[in-house]
Image (cartoon, rainbow, N blue to C red; front, side, top):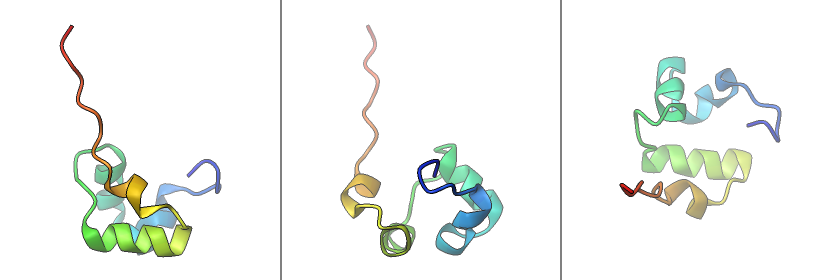
Length: 60
């Protein structure tokens, strides 16, 4: 978002309502396949990076 100068409001057409955008950004809601496809086509984000699961934290 920083690289393209986007705000959360700019993601509404690709993700949905603004509250859903914030849920996705705060990792409370996963991306759906439709969201991944729109982010990939509209912003050129590699689909592989959108699909990748976050690394789990290991207890030390």
